[in-house]
Image (cartoon, rainbow, N blue to C red; front, side, top):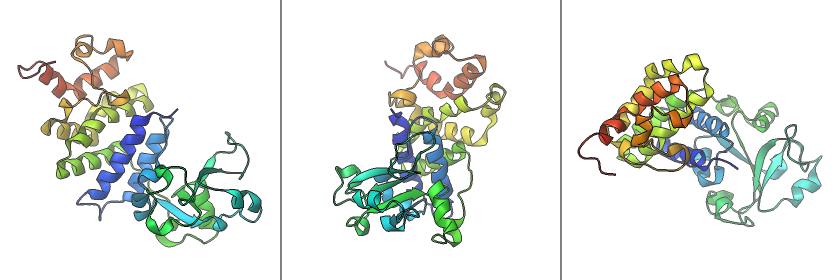
Length: 275
């Protein structure tokens, strides 16, 4: 089961970036790639049909009629039998597995079983079966090799650190006056510490993108809103008193959290705070 806070965070990030006043100058295609990659690290996935119009708009996700699939002729009976919303694996029609991962999605909105894969599809794609896949993916490469994607569409997304992307998200949210977005990502971005070596944890306090996120969370007082779900849950006053020992973290992570959540701790200790 996916960790839904990461899926929700991806939706939030992709939407906020599209609304940014700098959207026209940012590489949103690569930023969306980073968000999708980060989400996959948490047994979760980008929920394409929540935000499909934005993914298509910025050419991170591509849509083609099902007959354009490179293996359509070989697996014609399988492809012709598709309906509603389904995943397509590397070997079409075979069971999903480590050697046969999902490489695309199929959707026929007129037959889709719910709004998730129905009304969220752009209107001009609603009356036919389409396959969807992302820039940089296995199937994308096959379309590039076949000459069906050319020019900028044939260039893989750049690798952008997720904290740099989320710094852009919270800047956009601050512009838009949306403190909820900042409050959601303020704790969620700390999970990047799970994927760095112990000796790399301390330098996170000098990471300019994390510093910017923390700064914006502080000036907007986003740290005062606890979304209270999974990795978006804020530490309690007791967590600070125990130096996060109940979180089962080491000394380096404890130090990181004490720094990161210092604005929250100061609020807890202020006369204005009431439990």
